[in-house]
Length: 109
Image 1 (cartoon, rainbow, N blue to C red):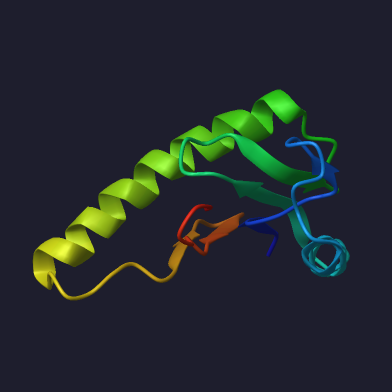
Image 2: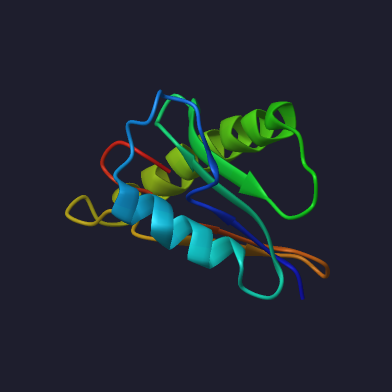
């Protein structure tokens, strides 16, 4: 099973706004067997950090981030509709070939 993790990466888009500790963690994640993509994006789907083992372009990463930002917003809304005191902490999407994991934070996806 191949895994796409949307949460971090090797190229920073915001002029180095990410801590070196977070960057080191992202570099370790991308080295795991089966991990193809690691992306961190803000709530507006702007890439903060991205890395790829599959040669995916930055434009494709931006498209993934935009789609996942919309999906995460909708999932968060469903969780809050069920229980107003609750919030979305993790979103996992699996298909036959891929797995996408989203860990939304205060300011990032």
